[in-house]
Image 1 (tube, rainbow, N blue to C red):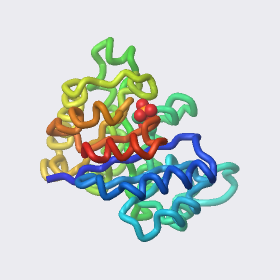
Image 2 (cartoon, rainbow, N blue to C red):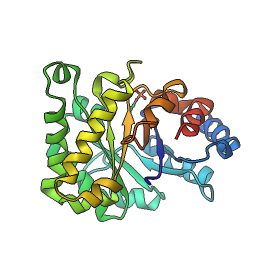
Image 3 (cartoon, protein in one colour):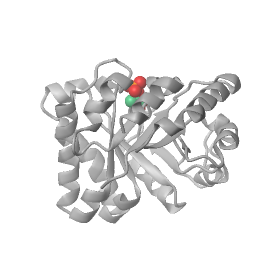
Image 4 (tube, helix red, strand yellow):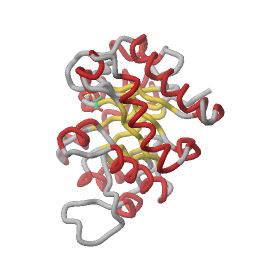
Length: 249
Ligand code: PEP
């Protein structure tokens, strides 16, 4: 049985005050979340604050990105050893906003994935198709290409200590959620692809769904057999909404 996981991706939102009240709100009612592990990924600059607020709780935290480089003359970048210093458990890699706005290639995402694992942290690998790609019938080909970049660089064994998030780009921040069946179909496809190489790892790896998940639709999504929780954007910024999603886990 795979552990359910619900991760909040705060994106470029927050302030010292807003973060404090959000985390206090989550902590106050975390007992209502019975099955899911909960994690938050704030902007880098707030990691110390979040660490201070979440140390000695059962809520995890992570970052939204990492550099593929170790250290040196890379202005503006954040290294994996810095994320280790701040107690991160998870690192999101290949979010569609990184891929589309900042031009991150499959190869770069795979290098970041490898860097996260080299430090013993858990990458959350985002994959997912654009609307045009879905409409052209290319969803599986796109997701396979994104997954293959990891498999080719790191091998299937690397997936054992990773999380995959299927996030159809057309569903992110749009209010348009994939139907539970649409999401399940892609999750099952991803698991099947991995199973062709290692069925044990395919059974173990957590595959999260992301794209306009809310308290009102989380239960039916998470009820699907290959959906193991969610990567949550907008709804992770309000404690009650985030907790409601966790309760569905
Ligand atoms: C995301 O950014 O990963 C995401 C799923 O956003 P939203 O929940 O707002 O669609």
